[in-house]
Image (cartoon, rainbow, N blue to C red; front, side, top):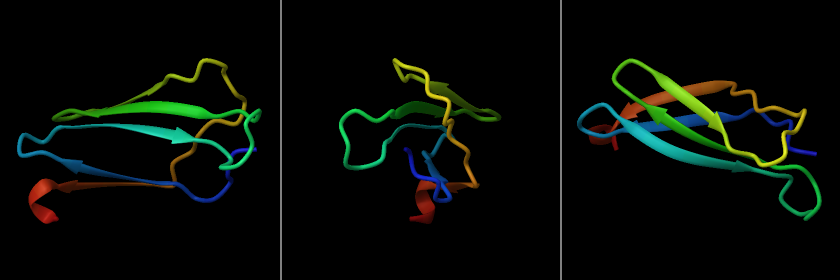
Length: 74
C-alpha cells in the first residue's frame, strides 16, 4: 500500500517562472506492490500533472500542500 502520510509538493521555479519535475511513489520496501509515477510542469499560469504509471492503481495521489518558490529564494 502506498503511504497515507500527508504529501507536500515543493516547486522551485527558474528565473522565467517555469519548473518541471518527476515524482515516484511506492511503499518503500516491497517489489510487487503498486506504485505511482507522475511528471509535473509549471508554466506561467498553469500546473499540469501527468500520471505515467503503467498499471493504473486505485490509490491515487492527493497533495495536501503545494508550495511554489523562486530559484532566488534558496
